[in-house]
Image (cartoon, rainbow, N blue to C red):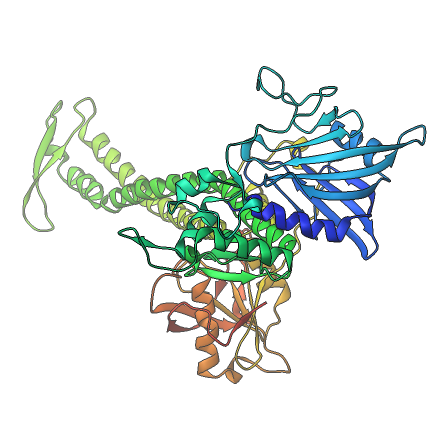
Length: 573
């Protein structure tokens, strides 16, 4: 993570230009380690987001939406008392460190002018937010209080004089000149220069290779640092994010050679870059964390269903081999005279094929009773065949449903989508309902299917979970729209919109293949080739009574085989 001293320097300059002389109108604390300040400036209202979370500590302007607790935390109430209505007089960086200081002129309860300083320390697990009285230098409070039991050198408690973190024996990057001699090893460079991250350390050396003590490339690390700082000062730096499969990997205000093979996105401001990086990375991590227990629960249910299928199949096979019981009963009835009392078996001639056959007997009962016993076993087995077949069909439907849910969980890219899937599983009984206190009355999630536009402008809608699949197919789609789904493979319902009185016959083969490719892409077979996709007008798609979410039956279908992909001329919206 590249929120190093250089990023701190750049963001401080940006904030100094944007919020200096701004008035703090509102203070919120969305999370235990987060602050949100609403600031009125000469150029309009802005919102400053501050986090001291160990994994995502940062300061930036934001346009994101945050949910505030019903009851403001104590630290939030304290900041409202001391900062709300105050005016920001200065924003600066402490040396080359990852420390940002925001000086604020406010009024106390007696309407006297007082000076406060909000200090943000961006130092991984030691990150903190501290409010200090400038005149006395004493701490008013901090969002994370640090006692002597935690840190003997430096405590962060109300009433104590604030001390900066101990300085390191390094050269601040802002004091580097083009003539400064620096080592040509990334670890040695980091131990020599204050305020640079491992990624920047490696980047500084990427333009200066040394082979056998001979400098191969021309740009020295010191020259490169001067270039980067100059780009910040003259406003020519370009904040950028390097992503891998949509997941942000690294960001900075300069190019990072080691990430050049990844996708790169440039931003107009560093705040936009920082907000996008952390919000998307946090969202990815949060989705992954929330999906794991849900996925594990569904996989457990699927394992049970597969085991049940195995047992039912074995029972069905045994029941289907029950004709011998009828034969035993018939042969015993025809040969009652040949059965001796107390015998454990009898050998008789099978009059169907003339062979000899041994029939086991219960020596405690007579021949007639043994015959009736075999007839009952045969009758019970025949009844079991119908019951086991019905149970097996129900179980197969459960397996298909659970497999579709697993695919939906794995494809989910947001927490609200996972919550919708959890609600679905609670309603179907696969997941225990949450306690009423934790459940909270929530409005049902509004269906927001994925949208694509085919090459001729035809709209294609794709459900993201089973609840949305039902809504899309049974409520939103018209009877003339075309429904698509991978054949016998878990996947999304796909609706091809037929506007202006068109029907399936008006779709060219190219458009059918194009839409079917999207259906295959949004299925469990996304990594396969030659995937079968059924398509049929929506009027022939029905939902049986009592069927689980997303489960439908259909007739009059046709099938095409396609490779899963999003066509080049199909645009996702």
